[in-house]
Length: 303
Ligand code: ADP
Image (tube, rainbow, N blue to C red):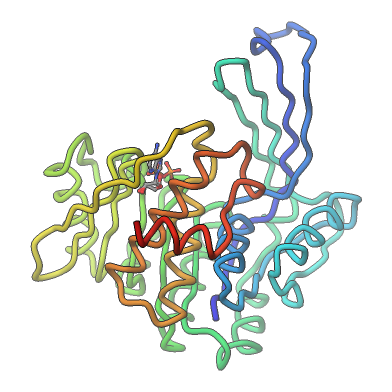
């Protein structure tokens, strides 16, 4: 199984022909309210792949708590390790214009209350049921670092999606088996401007030099580059699709990669499964609603 430690938000999205300027009010033409947050999205991607998936995270005591934890359960994620804290559930406030351009304010709220003790007790409860730990950077970085160390100590395969690219403690890297940044995140974290295969290989090497075992730099519609110690970097070509909305491609990738690894798939094939899930996610609107089911992922990965 897979254990995800991370963020849960209600994604509150308003659609309008154009985004308002500062101080301006515009009339919109559509609205959605769905489960989101990188942690939750990756948990949903993993569960939809068919791998038993648990999530450690925090929701508040407001109406968004049922929206988000209910959404996780609906997609098959086990929510027994979630904690309900006083105050509001985390929110992502998103505006999208007719060209698909967006701006986003993420307010962590309950997500900021996730702490080391909750990680430790949750991990202890499921350590015999899971082999992969999925982490991102939408909760406090110190808690992510604690989870990485605890997961490594428990013998789990630790996968870190370093998104958003906030500063992380340097001692996290030796606990990370696989890191999955996109080009922007790899550039910010390593200082190597990633624009092509060779710069992606240099960025990947930066992570390896700090103790990470494998770096997968995701390159959007150019596929992904796998950089492993002692091996030649390996470019995986993309699955060609008609992109509609690139939201959650990275979450689909990492969640499915983790789920495939936990199901015993070897790394190169797990990367391919993740890429197929990412490609399918960009053919549909939204975050969690765009995450594909197992059969679709397997069909595209085999093509
Ligand atoms: P993020 O959403 O974090 O920026 P990427 O855009 O790199 O992540 O997408 C993750 C993976 O999803 C890519 O490695 C690729 O395999 C797949 N993917 C993303 N966008 C496309 C696309 N337009 N066409 C085909 N595959 C895509």
